[in-house]
Length: 209
Length: 138
Image (cartoon, rainbow over all chains, first blue to last red; front, side, top):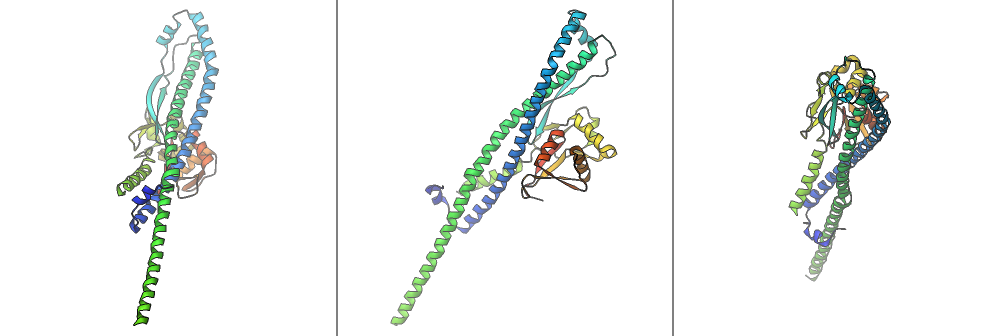
């Protein structure tokens, strides 16, 4: 409901009514657009959530074999195995970037796989493949979780705006338009009654003359 | 009073302007992007959007010889004045790429997609598609 103070503030003019009606049309349009944006954002959020759950499952599957293999290699090559590995194999390079999902900017990482390794060490090739797969899954999980958080924040703010339009701005504008229309109708009725009264007075005067 | 109204109008118009801040100023060619080490575009809000290399390769594979004519990102239009949850892909090459990726039938210049298809499309082509909201209608 519109408070009395607000009603008193509205100028009962036709221009004001036109302006309010224009604002209502604009508010309805914005509401429709924001509601659809909210739906898209929620869908994106759910997709990211699904992806992060999938990646988490993949990491859980990969982490134990990689760990076991590294323990095995440590046994075979001794304590210097990781140093040897580092020196003899090309490493993954990562580039920090950003990705934009429906206006929500999230951080992302592009991993560049190194060229073919010429050196052959028993067991190291498989370990390298598995480890890079694990690293890629971890990076993907990080990206998906970051996107989930950013989308969650955006959904929250968009929802507030949609609700403000739906429950405050649009009803207030509709109510103000309704009240202005009532006021104009009332004015018209008053005018008619006044005209009738004038007419009857004039008729009475004419009869007296 | 009048100032309040102006603020409201300005806010509403600002919302409509900001809703498409994730659209690029200029789309880029698929082949051009594939040659770059990190394929990216600059968006209207000034942020950088990086394309997934796997998605680019997939689009190239799907389109074959015509791949070089495709501009990215593929823009999916949403028209609030039309039916709710109703999206349109414009352009013959874009329609072909999207229909092949989704496995649906699509010919001509326009392809109409509904919400479940959009979810599927965004899942498959997360970085190479973007949704444009057209408040003014067609």
